[in-house]
Amino acid sequence: MEIYHQYVRLRKQFGRHPKFTDEGAEMFADIRPNEEHAKEYIPRNPVITVTQCIPEMSEHEANTMAVVLAPKVMCHVEGGWPKDVDYTEAEHTIRYRKKVEKDEDYIKTVTVLGGSVEELLKQNNAIDIYQHYYSDANIPSHNAEVPSVKTVTVFKDPSNVQRSASYVSWHPDASVPKVVVSYSILQFQQQPADMPLSSYVWDVNNPNTPDYEMVPSSQICTSKFNLKDTNLIGAGLYNGQFSYYDPRKGTSPVDTTPIDISHRDPIYDFAWLQSKTGAEVSTDGQVLWWDIRKLSERLEEMPLKEKGSDVTMGGVVLEYDPAAGPTNFMVGTEQGSIFSCNRKAKNPADRVKYSLSGHHGPIYGLRRNPFNSKFFMSIGDWTARIWTDDTAVRTPILTTKYHPTYLTGGTWSPTRPGVFYTIKMDGNLDVWDLFYKHNEPTLTVQVSDCPLTTFAAHDSGATIAIGTADGSCTILNLSSGLSEMAPNEKLSINNMFERETQREKNLEKAIKEAKVKARKEAARKDEVADNVTEEQLKALEVEFFKVTQADGSDEKTEVPAEDEEAGEAEEKEE
Image (cartoon, rainbow, N blue to C red; front, top):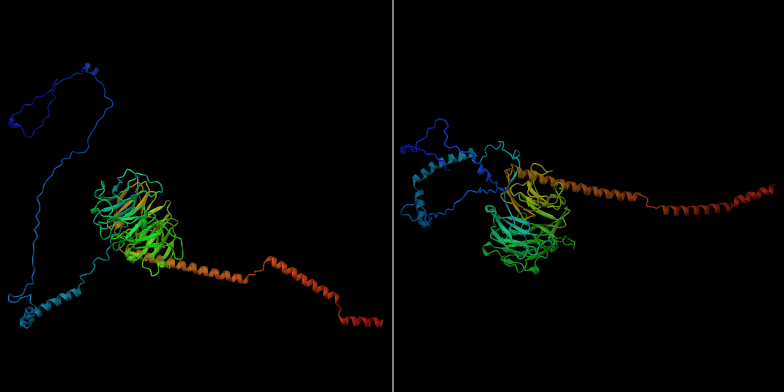
């Protein structure tokens, strides 16, 4: 049965604006229910409905007009000379100058121009054109802003085997948003046979696919861009070798150190020096120097031993800052000690200048303050400690509270002298701002449910990269209050560090004086005290009584001669 309604209208009235009016109801059809159809009704179960929410997109290609570039050359010559004077000849120009200087109009013109120039100079002396206006105005501070972070993107390990992100490093050029992530499994005897070895370079703007793949012979524990030639990427391998890559030459390493003269343990950290050489540290207790132009032989080696000790320490983290000296570097060890070293010491035994101890476990972070290289921070066990590069102070000037979980890394903020970051085993990121408070972090963020393994801050200070144990690398964007320097912050932080350094010196001086005083008091008591034991007293007492008894018996037997004569005289008188 078809139901239709015919609508009749003149052709000229089509397209006109309709005018609606109220009319009564009109019935077009009356359909009654059919019981026969109801008997044939079957409910459909289950009901599956598929919908497509993604809008349909069309692909279109356009070929734009090519821009043709043509070089244009312009020659600038010295002008202002008359046509009869050749300005390329020095004699002609000197002769013309002398002729003009002798003219009377020249002197009058210079006198008139000198007056106007003198007036302008007096105005500059009266008005300071470099004056800072509104210096006493209320500058808005970051106190009112609530610290916060925002997740930009997350890089996932493309491999099918779960590996941890062991090291993260940003591109040296702040305008290039790239980060190199090293993936490895460092747990003992937990590496599957078919484990992939590749590590990747990621582009923040394209988090779906890696920008470059590094295919090594052993898993990469640490990797960094070269500071001068950013096309080169250095990598420290699990088997102790060092290699470097060039994305322009493929995914394989350009050159690798021989395994027989490399480290015997994994390379946990290395640093590019000012030239094409690099230094690396491993838990086998050696620091090696290499030149990438000739990796077949090592330039230099240094054992990690204290002065006068034969015990070799295993290095975990290496810190090199040219601001502290081109030959100075620091090493954090597995035993919790910090070695301050000088590569060019006169005596090889004096390469380790001094060592600091205070941590109860391996040191996972060691960085100098980017605004004052005299002060540096170490991260290990449950605390982060700030030290001073002063041999007179062997204790930390600042120490964070003991956390309930291990700290696994962190670094200073590159844009704020009083801000540093720490990451922990429970997946939390702590942001400390010493400019406002010392006893607790300014911001704590739960980045992941897995332990955080590595950390790197971008040179802009507003972006950070955090690696986790499940192979993820999270890129976070910090609020302006955590990345922009506050007024007078640098001076205040330096004054605070100097004040704490002086306080530690005073405390150490007081402790030394107390120890000297205690030793003198103990020596004085030893001189005054009677050192005779009880046994010696008893022996002296027995000997004394023996002597006194012998003297008493002799006095009783002896009779004086005068008494005998007196007795005989008395007997005669009777």
